[in-house]
Length: 114
Length: 112
Image 1 (tube, rainbow over the protein chains, first blue to last red):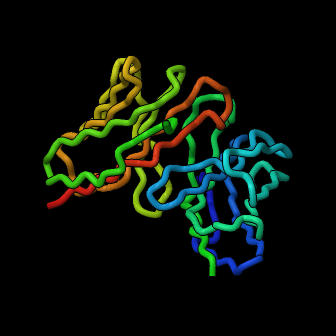
Image 2 (cartoon, rainbow over the protein chains, first blue to last red):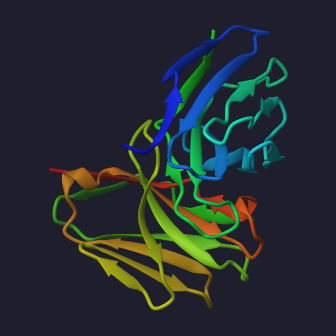
């Protein structure tokens, strides 16, 4: 079945540590996105990529980094510069990034700080 | 003023009740509107698009009021399984995904 797979489901980060969240899709979608959700809040865009080897900052990119070396994969690294990383992280994809299309979401990763 | 605003709730209603949520948006040039449903600590799932003329899908009715800049979601005959957070999504006039804005969600709790 086609879909988006995020891993791990739960992740703990120590102070000063970088951690990487995985996002893989087999939908052959061009566009992929990372969102952050805090309790009682909507989704805020961290980074997005409309094509392989290209990505753009979203509204809250500071303290995060991404890569898009393969169409299927869009990993997110939460760096030590992100001082308040505890949140629910959602990866999404769409067929292209230029139209008004349905977003397909992964099941999310809950990141907490030890 | 936030770009997209929703009453956070929670809305506590008995089974069988009719409940309505509103979502206001600030950019009058916004083009497209959607309602997503999100269960606790799960991914959002598209519930329905919102068309200018209003649209219905079973017990769910979505409406758009461009003059007052809000969209609404009406749920009839509420079921226990309708308990969730409902997010409105507004797509602005700019192209690309940066123009997509999520509301903070309205929580619905349907009680037996």
